[in-house]
Length: 234
Image (tube, rainbow, N blue to C red):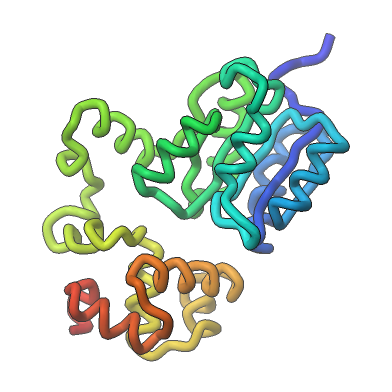
């Protein structure tokens, strides 16, 4: 008898090579599973058209669109809880808007990037058992939403002096990247300082620009200073 908690076909939809490698490492917990990867919505759709996928790990920010559209396509025609594909989001986006849009689209879990592969593996295993696969920060947001007091449950690093960071919509890692580029560090230097790939930094810088509404490093630093996001760097 097939074990429903052990996926046979896994699809990782991720355009960042470093994050893709981390995800591949995490799903290694499912011994014997065939792992497929896609870096665009189009290639993910082509894979889904050919193969029945048991577990999909989906980034939301893709070069040709949003992973939320893919979630809807996977779950269309199925009740969310009985969909043959377990869909787990893996993203840097931690806003309520993205979180609840993904859950409404059919996501069975919502993981923030930055967790080690071992933690991801445990959360994905939980998802295959029908248990919630949610990063702690996201769980706090869900609880806060239903309690009607989101500002009361912010993590300690977003309280007091960090409150303005939260209101700017930046994640802790995005804020860290912003502060480093504001010091004049190149993208390569930022990648080295944080121990990640330059492609990861490029993705994070792009999202910093989007959240601040700017188009260059100089403008980002200026806007960050205006909003009081640089702390002692100002």
